[in-house]
Image 1: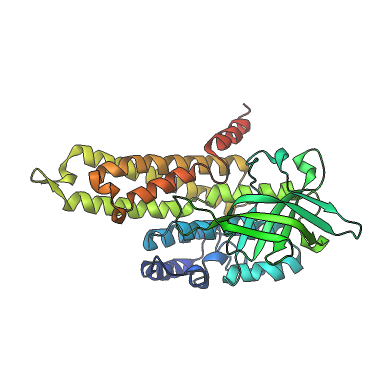
Image 2: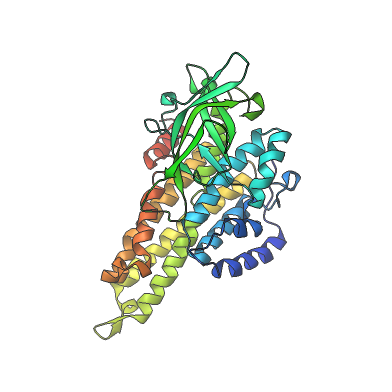
Length: 372
């Protein structure tokens, strides 16, 4: 479904407004609806589907700006997870009825979406999925199983759930279901405690004889693999857009620290060891930003493929971790203090290597694209 163009001129003015708003955000406030009211969730959605039609690059710039100015990591990540793994599949595979029911509330922030594919014993191994949906005598679907690491799970109003509906290949044996919160038999687990991505809530999901109709199937019976691949192609490419903003903010603060703090009568910034660290951090940020934005432009031109998505995810997460390896030594012992944000950023960097597929999984996909 081709529906994006380059960011329109008015986007520049909108982005300035977002920057001003985000700079005033309180970290402990409930910001999902206020952020959605800014139009953040609708940028990559075409006007014909109720969005602004600004495009993928615009959406990535907005997520980057939001994270940079607010200093938040979890909320932009959680919103990006909805954008790429819930909204995108609804745009591509959803019926007009499904879009009317779910997409409009998701874009306006009056509903929250979650994608539930990962299970306790199967991450990237789709053939090991145990969640099943079987037809009953009345022709309805009975959904049973459990999911874990469901981003937005604790607050989601609708879940895109991947289940096995036939034996054999994942290409034909999986089906995606739209499961509203409150469906009998659906139980959302407690918030999962974690060290990184503060503000992004994650939980488990349990389904015990959830009764669903064909109208709840997204992409048709047996179409789950296509739904998953579409979601992953976009999520892997763009889920790390907010980290560019976090890196930019951290670099700016590190430079200010190096200029203002003195050792042996001289500013830290006068020492080559510190200067080289800051330059390497700048290189990592610039490299990651250039690749991600170029990937977004490919998506706007409808030429994004899985190899490029995996390349982007791998490269940005790698540079994010390199960036964070340099950061603590700019601060020395002060890096242990919460107010510097160094420890929190390190945790976010480690996490970036695993969600949307591990770095090893991205390498496997890239190698296959190379014919290896």
